[in-house]
Length: 369
Image (cartoon, rainbow, N blue to C red; front, side, top):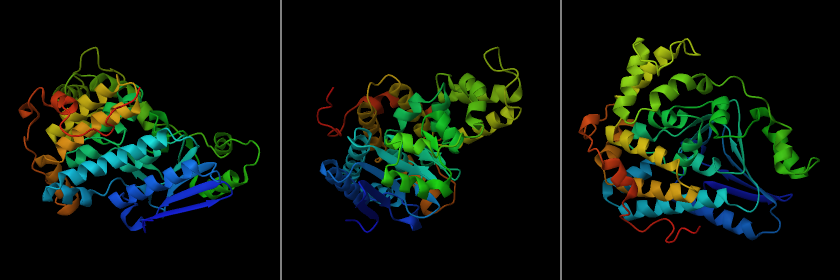
């Protein structure tokens, strides 16, 4: 058992906790392997009727994969180890999605990247007023994975593209609206929810029990932004998305852009979104846009994970991922030097090539129908 994973069984509930609060419960390779073993053992354990998945501490459920560990693999050229990290993680994410017993995921606090891989595919996904949910990969010259493109592709309209490209952080209301969560339960009621799940009081199913603690989220800022986000992020390329954002922000758009947006602050938000996109890795943005749009046509989560694997095994060898982690996590100078530095310099068919070319052994040697 990893020192950073706590797993107990009582009253028919398997309770597994990510126990690395000093690192916001970031997932190491060892933690992922341990979690895989726990879920496999409980799959066959008749004493486990449901699983609760949460994180230690009050700051977050899981901030994602261990970026420093990934940086080490990339800089030392340990690419095959990185490949196995991703394969193991993706298989765990898919196993949670297909688990034969209910999995209740408590996304209390920061839940990003790999944390969404664990919780976002669970059968009952709970957020709190402290939840901050995001797929922030483009900020480090990377692309959403762990089934993130599958969830982003299913978000209403073009919200998933916006969330992916801009690494936008969602609160509880946004997460429910975008389809990353099912219920909002106030953090101070989580202990009562856990007690009720253990007691199995009427009503008896985990979903019905969780519903007893659900509160209606407040207004979603993401939902309010839907008019201008749909109009701008439906453009065919990242460059054209930025151009539409600029036109809308400046009030010089054509009839396709909302003249009277629902949110009075929308023009300023659009300008800020365009500003942000111009600071991010052009390569990561191009691949991410193509990945989310391709995921819309994929039939299963496993197919999205396979597509993501092709992308991440390519990125692990690229300059921009190493440089993004260096600038954001290692040196923290927040001054990444992307290569290429401009969107116009990204080869036009690079994203399609990255997402379709199988360069290494796949996650599933044969993806079953």
